[in-house]
Image 1 (cartoon, one colour):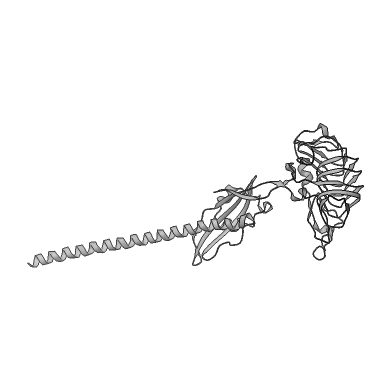
Image 2 (cartoon, rainbow, N blue to C red):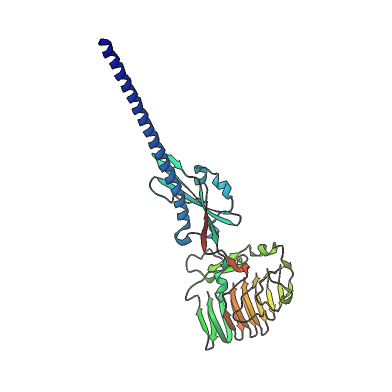
Length: 376
């Protein structure tokens, strides 16, 4: 009997030991599962932080995105290989775009012709990184369109003076003064510097005489000029450019670029819907018409002068005319398209001007209207 009771004790103790082992195993498994769940939760939160960073970089309907803000010094594959410390140490990385125990940053990257907003997120617990996301990226495309300055009528950084009666359809603005007499039937919005100042983009570099050191208070009209010194380099290096300082428009074809390192003399011809770019580092003299098919024409002619543009004769001229200096018309011409001048716009005699915004020459285009087209 005593032996039976001893055997029963052994059996009971064995069962208790087995139950204890099963219990400890279950507890250990539960702890592992809890730890795995916590790690998964932290990893998911970190990845959501990366996406939240991209959303912050995008802004409401793309309002925070500007093509000029994208860094071009790195490739996407290079950034995707960065650690958290490398990514957050980038000079162009954003401030923290998340809150609480989630930290996230975004970085604007241009890789070749592709634009990306790259985001990374991390979860911080007790001062340590609990989880770090993989880099996430959104590819952004910009729908190009004409620079608004090239679709907005007559724009001068100094003054506009037209002697004689004129018929104008569209906008007329100078940051200085405007002196123009409009015939009945004109549909023009005329403003000058006393109404508002408008930024005037111009080709080339700012002349030495335009001092902008005092532009903080009561700025002069020249303070509202913005210059692009790389314009001429772009066309000078264009492989297909025709290098000449005298050209007959009738000899040109759709897509042609003419570059003159000096003063360009242009003989008239039919442009129609062809897209042609004429560039001179000095003056451009337009002799004869750049005829097209009327007020419904596409505007494919783009004329860039580092200094002045002059129209000679009683002609019809269709195009976008962009001058670092003045634009002057000698004679009674009809002008269709847009004129932007760095000093003044002047016509000796009346002017018939119709503002057209159907500009088709891609050289006038700037990136605009961003949209996200893919996520990585």
